Length: 238
Image (tube, rainbow, N blue to C red; front, side, top):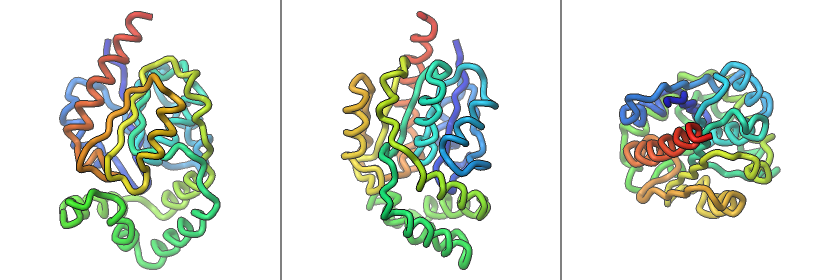
């Protein structure tokens, strides 16, 4: 049984985020929705659920994982498997809002590339800081996004809520995937998730920062393949 796989990207990302992983998932039907048109995770989750198949596998990265958490809170019965990649499950600290809004202002004044330049040291593992190809991939994704989308995604990040209490209602395989050197979604955040969902499969990728789909695509794909098989087996036996 092949179930569609829905991939939700992070802030200022597009389908290019997933291309390296999709090369290793050749037999999977993949849907990569646009991550815009709403100003809260609740609104975007409802919008996506209205346009997706009745049952699907759901994997989200960073901001996309926050929206994925909201989708499973709204419709756990529709999700055949949930994969959360590089996610901080907590509500955003009020002190973070000023910095997020300052990045928006910087993008409006100077464009998206200076925003990526500022965030770059926290985005990837130290061994990748000189990787110009990876840096330019992030810059190109960012510049393909509009200022309006950046504004919407910033609002989603600021207004997100802690949904760990909803995870026990998800009766489907849960994969938690993170990089060992992620400065944004830290090992502490992953422990908070695994404490809330002790049955989850938790995998930490070594020599990896926040952008694990681009830093370690083969390792990500391997973890997702195992999760997909497990999820499809669960569906076929119920």
